[in-house]
Length: 122
Image 1 (cartoon, one colour):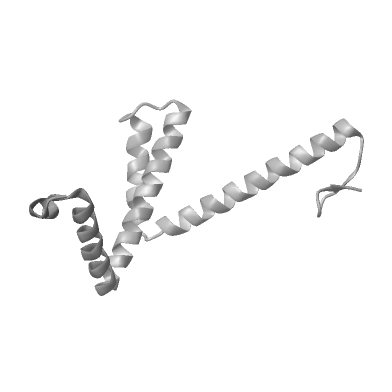
Image 2 (tube, one colour):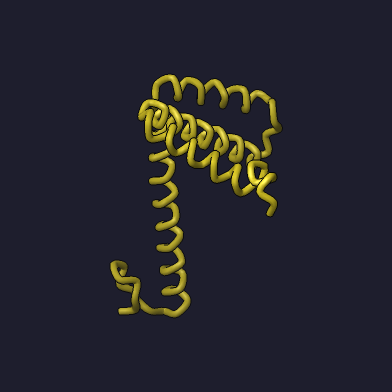
């Protein structure tokens, strides 16, 4: 690569941006907290939009407007990260429930008993 074009190289620009971003990120802890809150709000908005899309609600209808008001209210109360933590806990319990039902279905098919703690045939 020619040295005259080094300053416009995508790799150089990306590396330079990352260095500046990391320096700014470390210098200002308030900005770090603000960015984490912003990411949590964006994550919650995306998950709500995705869920409404799966339910068949169209973009911009009453459900989306109500959801936006709810997200704004939740973020004003600084409860966004708590809501996301509850959601991850529910997702884990659903995954474990599905695992349990698969084990029990296999036990019923095979007419065997399973130790629920180890998941192995008794």
